[in-house]
Length: 135
Image 1: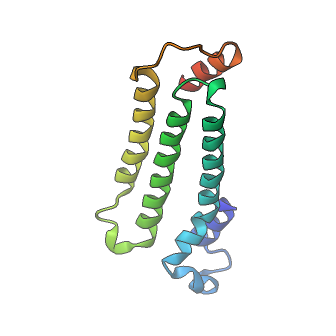
Image 2 (image 1 turned 60 degrees about the vertical axis):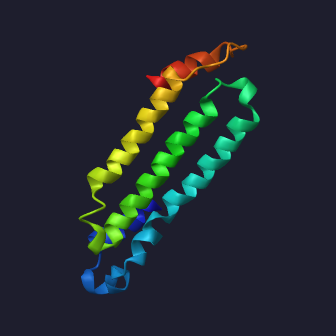
């Protein structure tokens, strides 16, 4: 859905005259709606991680929430950058990517340097999966 809407917004198939209705700034918000719907799915998975935290690594819920928040802020800033021409000097693509990268950096720090209580740790596939996820 996102790629189709983005294609229609950027490439204007059929000529630019057929797409004058899409020149408003609210159209970019409409284009990004499918991606924002994925954030709801991410939130539901975060709730799942919190409800079943005894089966996962101790910080998995917090780490996943950091990534989801960074992705959400990135999408909002990118949408603002594309839709508001007067804010483009302030909300650049580099700035929005910096926020996105900062979320992943904090995710790494929480996963590797945060103090973890010495409780029972999950065995088997969860350990291997979390190791591969960090790599």
